[in-house]
Image (cartoon, rainbow, N blue to C red; front, side, top):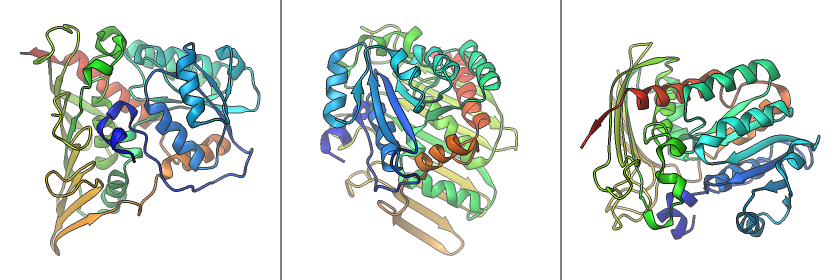
Amino acid sequence: MSQIQKADGMNYAPQGKPSPVVKTGEFTFAAAHLDHGHVYGQCNGLLEAGAELKWVYDPDPKKVAAFQLKYPQARAARTLDELLDDPSVKLITAAAVPCDRGPLGLRAMAAGKDYFTDKTPFTSLDQLDAAKAAVARTGKKYMVYFSERLHVESAMYATDLAASGAIGKIVQVIGLGPHRLGKANRPDWFFEKAKFGGILTDIGSHQFEQFLTYTGATDATVTQAAVGNFANPDKPEFEDFGEASLLGNNGSSNYIRVDWFTPNGLSTWGDGRTVILGTKGYIELRKYVDVAREKSGDNVYIVDDTGERHLNVTGQVGFRFFGQLILDCLNRTETAMTQGHAFKAAELCLRAQLAARKIT
């Protein structure tokens, strides 16, 4: 991971070891609408799992040219329809402006393609409802790149630990998702609430997905939520702080805090942390850096009856989601992530955003 990417969350695109699950030509995909740099992470993961990237489309030729420097095998399409009309393309991956992600997914599924979008997948409950109906109608997948778990080895390691019962029944998850703003480099849509959806809808979506995963909850209610704009008065629709609490349908609880206050002195784009409390111990993840100790991320701290342990799992876990997703698309299974899970995480972030009181 380059230092530039570590410093800039918008262009953070993890790379792992090639671990193909298919042979060359068995799974072809296309990339469209390159509005967020996360699309590079989505493509990296699929390519490392053996997928073949055939097309790229964006109305901005500069975005396409930059994409082709990284992925020269991708042909530049003149229209989105070229991707949608190609029968060899099984999946469309995209990172459109958030408000456009839902409508794009409807087009992809209507054309017989599975769809893999950057988070947040929707900016309204109406979009979510439309996608649910389209999935039921077409049988296609509407999958979401929740990168802060799926593309983080420490988070995937914790996924397995929690599921194994290593720290007992999970009682609570605390998720902290600070981000560096990089204000001068952000596009206009980033500051328009109708387009980005609000801070809990946007970066908060990662945290709600992790809560569902680690606790095993399949539903939750929002017990409190708040948003604020403390440091960006020139962008009145923007929210630079958000928090929320959930109560899961299995009795587990969740608190999240997301913000755009990462100072320039931090060596990475955000000091993301997760604390998972169980009845027999707890886990802390220091995902991207161990502040003032070491620059490497993927630090896992475990405390249980046997003692205290610190593990660095960089290079030891990999990113299995992408290979599982490919096989799910081919076999019509739900190993990587169930559709219900993806939609529930999306619903919770939208409901938290709607419930949020404004604070200053």
